[in-house]
Image 1 (cartoon, helix red, strand yellow):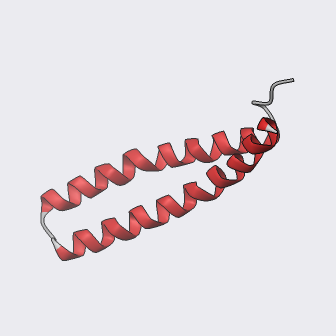
Image 2: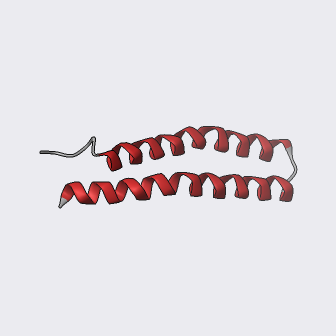
Image 3: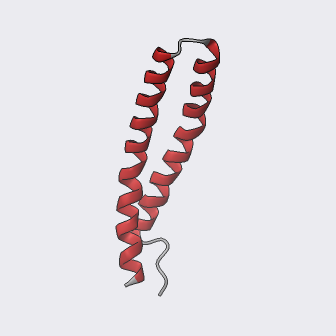
Amino acid sequence: MMNQLKKWMGIIWILLGPVAIYYLVQTALQQTTAHPTVDAKIQWGVFVVVFIPIAIGLMIFGYYALKGEYDQE
């Protein structure tokens, strides 16, 4: 039961990563065009640069969960 839940959550993590990156980049573009100051560009640039590896890590975690690496026997 728990192993099956881990696999389903793996699918959710894999799908959540690209969706989160898309919305982050979309929000960053909207905010930098609405407030075209250097401060806003630097702030959103840092957000995007820091968050993309985190989202990739979530996708990798989801892949391993889907693969069954975290299953207990």
